Length: 122
Ligand SMILES: [Zn+2]
Ligand SMILES: [Zn+2]
Image (cartoon, rainbow, N blue to C red; front, side, top):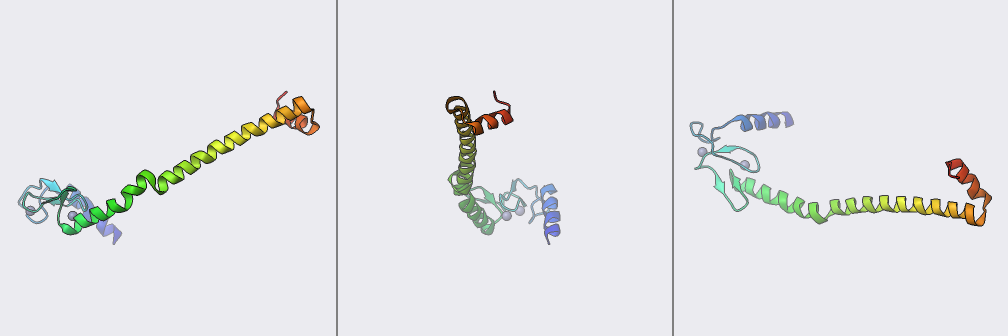
């Protein structure tokens, strides 16, 4: 099924004549299914050019579902979360190193001095 659709899609992309009028040059393409359309067959809508109302509805549904998420939804949340995690990990690492360094130099803790020696820090 998927293979047949793929083949159909490739054929449609290569075609330059209207799907309904094989003798007419296609001047338009449906935004959703990419079928070539002539001036008589194209449906000019506010969203773009479509072969029919079904494709227009699909286009509207697709955008209603994905557009808000792209800007501020799951993706933004996930991206922000990963960024915050990296910043936190780096921050904690630096803080830990400072604590170990301070512990070794100021307090003279044997544990910290050994840890610094292991890390190669004098
Ligand atoms: Zn279409
Ligand atoms: Zn046509």
